[in-house]
Length: 511
Image (cartoon, rainbow, N blue to C red; front, side, top):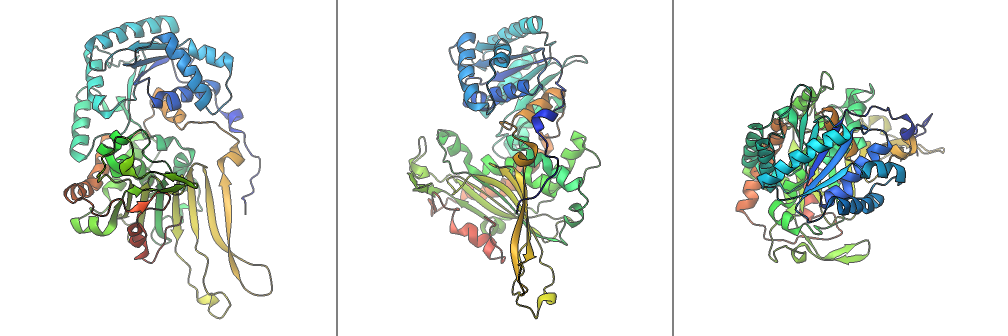
């Protein structure tokens, strides 16, 4: 059953024309895939939707030996492919004329001197007024170096009339200690309100809608607690393998790559207490409070309530795919996990005795990110002497990707003389109601950074709280190598132990 909506809205026609003030964005690692596939297409989409200032420029900086003309042509091709919106030559020409390129190594002080000179020229040419957004689309190995060199060239210094913001990509540290050290070093140079630790999952409309759904609708918030909710499941599944990221994945693994950032951001929005307002620090304090409320994992808990896996050979969409250990730049005897599942408990009054099941992995049967909230069954005594043997399970499901929307599953009487109950589903789809809105998922996050809104970005304590939860898992897994890898075929839902994890509680994964 599809949810009927009235007065459907075309989002593109209702966007408020509120571009940020004059600014320039400097992208470190500008020759990489992130710039071509996400960042430049996002900026172009923002231009189409009138969410860029007229006084604007882009400077790309990387080691690739190319010039500005070649950089512009390369981005023309990639934006046509990845912007997911109409390609308008007039808008692109406006945009292209504001793109510049600087070649150099990130640890070379001379490069930052040259960057300062180029920024001064851009300020004069395009009126960007010294407001700079530095986007570190690089390996984490360069984060400290770039910030340090930028500060030595006095590019970081904000004033009453000029802002300087730094977007830091994940991974933010490799464990609790390294995350703390990175925070400490960045904060010796920058202020917390200059640092934007980005998680692209928070650019998804459904993720941002969680707070509105929970706190803006009186019919849901009263039931958002242990009295009515049986369990919560968060699944982030990918069909792809490690592709060209074998070297990175060997160092990171699935747990580091997905859980303390993506998964915990979804968890905190779903489970946090109501903030008093939508001020960035108020919201982020509630998120940190929630993550700090996760029951600490003991050595026994890691063995009992956490599962790791690594994919072997198998099939995806009927096509054979290789196992992880035969992927490029992966050790033939690798013990790196490509799948993680866990059961977490939150020790506060709202969520007492409600298990949260998290599951994420590569080479799974389908690409999907969703949050499934199962409600407790009502007393069945009313149906004791009827033909109804089992009541339909009630689920509220938030679909994050690839299709964004919300589903509600419940029971209804099947037409006929007998009392029979069948499952029905009400679906809300963003595109059906609001119309198509081409997006890479980065537009909102870049816009927020330009206007100085940190609500959707992690604060230092939020990052460290997430690492604190997973630290015991890292320590156990580092000391005890898996003996059964690979333990799930590509194209399946992970190792059998992941099913046993939830089955022993009398529950099943929703998908």
